[in-house]
Length: 98
Figure (cartoon, rainbow, N blue to C red):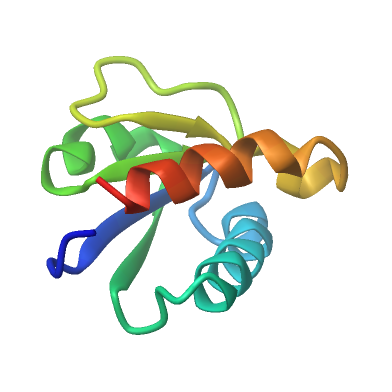
Protein backbone atom coordinates (compact mmCIF):
# COMPACT_ATOMS: atom_id res chain seq x y z
CA UNK A 1 0.00 0.00 0.00
CA UNK A 2 1.42 3.33 -1.04
CA UNK A 3 1.74 6.23 1.41
CA UNK A 4 0.91 8.70 -1.35
CA UNK A 5 -2.50 10.32 -0.95
CA UNK A 6 -4.81 9.13 -3.74
CA UNK A 7 -6.59 11.78 -5.76
CA UNK A 8 -10.07 10.61 -6.78
CA UNK A 9 -12.20 12.41 -9.34
CA UNK A 10 -15.97 12.04 -9.06
CA UNK A 11 -17.90 13.28 -12.08
CA UNK A 12 -21.59 13.78 -12.78
CA UNK A 13 -23.62 16.03 -15.06
CA UNK A 14 -23.24 19.16 -12.93
CA UNK A 15 -20.47 18.08 -10.57
CA UNK A 16 -22.78 18.55 -7.59
CA UNK A 17 -25.86 16.38 -7.08
CA UNK A 18 -25.23 12.74 -7.95
CA UNK A 19 -21.50 13.02 -7.40
CA UNK A 20 -22.24 14.06 -3.80
CA UNK A 21 -24.32 10.90 -3.28
CA UNK A 22 -21.47 8.77 -4.65
CA UNK A 23 -18.89 10.73 -2.65
CA UNK A 24 -20.58 9.98 0.68
CA UNK A 25 -20.69 6.25 -0.09
CA UNK A 26 -17.09 6.19 -1.30
CA UNK A 27 -15.85 8.10 1.75
CA UNK A 28 -17.65 5.65 4.04
CA UNK A 29 -16.17 2.69 2.12
CA UNK A 30 -12.64 4.06 2.24
CA UNK A 31 -12.78 5.19 5.86
CA UNK A 32 -14.06 1.80 7.05
CA UNK A 33 -11.21 0.08 5.14
CA UNK A 34 -8.47 2.15 6.79
CA UNK A 35 -7.97 4.83 4.15
CA UNK A 36 -9.18 7.82 6.21
CA UNK A 37 -6.90 10.78 5.49
CA UNK A 38 -5.18 8.94 2.63
CA UNK A 39 -7.32 10.26 -0.22
CA UNK A 40 -8.61 13.48 -1.68
CA UNK A 41 -11.90 13.63 -3.60
CA UNK A 42 -12.58 16.25 -6.25
CA UNK A 43 -16.08 16.62 -7.70
CA UNK A 44 -16.37 17.93 -11.26
CA UNK A 45 -18.92 18.26 -14.05
CA UNK A 46 -18.69 15.49 -16.64
CA UNK A 47 -17.72 18.06 -19.28
CA UNK A 48 -14.37 18.71 -17.56
CA UNK A 49 -13.61 15.13 -16.46
CA UNK A 50 -11.35 14.22 -19.37
CA UNK A 51 -9.00 17.17 -18.85
CA UNK A 52 -8.97 16.86 -15.04
CA UNK A 53 -8.35 13.09 -15.17
CA UNK A 54 -4.70 13.82 -16.04
CA UNK A 55 -4.11 14.80 -12.40
CA UNK A 56 -6.02 11.95 -10.71
CA UNK A 57 -5.39 8.35 -9.73
CA UNK A 58 -8.84 7.25 -10.86
CA UNK A 59 -12.29 8.56 -11.74
CA UNK A 60 -15.76 7.51 -10.61
CA UNK A 61 -18.56 8.78 -12.86
CA UNK A 62 -22.27 8.63 -12.09
CA UNK A 63 -23.16 9.13 -15.75
CA UNK A 64 -21.70 7.93 -19.03
CA UNK A 65 -18.00 7.14 -19.21
CA UNK A 66 -16.18 10.29 -20.30
CA UNK A 67 -14.11 9.96 -23.46
CA UNK A 68 -10.33 10.30 -23.50
CA UNK A 69 -9.65 9.54 -19.86
CA UNK A 70 -6.09 9.59 -18.54
CA UNK A 71 -6.70 7.35 -15.51
CA UNK A 72 -8.69 4.22 -14.59
CA UNK A 73 -12.51 4.47 -14.66
CA UNK A 74 -15.07 3.12 -12.17
CA UNK A 75 -18.78 3.13 -13.02
CA UNK A 76 -20.48 5.00 -10.17
CA UNK A 77 -24.09 4.46 -11.26
CA UNK A 78 -24.58 1.57 -8.76
CA UNK A 79 -24.24 4.15 -5.95
CA UNK A 80 -27.29 5.95 -7.31
CA UNK A 81 -29.38 2.80 -7.84
CA UNK A 82 -28.50 1.28 -4.47
CA UNK A 83 -27.66 -2.12 -5.94
CA UNK A 84 -24.61 -3.85 -7.42
CA UNK A 85 -22.36 -1.56 -5.37
CA UNK A 86 -20.06 -4.49 -4.55
CA UNK A 87 -18.32 -4.43 -7.95
CA UNK A 88 -17.67 -0.68 -7.80
CA UNK A 89 -16.45 -1.03 -4.19
CA UNK A 90 -14.11 -3.85 -5.19
CA UNK A 91 -12.65 -1.78 -8.06
CA UNK A 92 -12.14 1.28 -5.83
CA UNK A 93 -10.42 -0.74 -3.09
CA UNK A 94 -8.19 -2.37 -5.70
CA UNK A 95 -7.19 1.03 -7.11
CA UNK A 96 -6.54 2.39 -3.62
CA UNK A 97 -4.14 -0.48 -2.97
CA UNK A 98 -1.99 0.27 -6.02
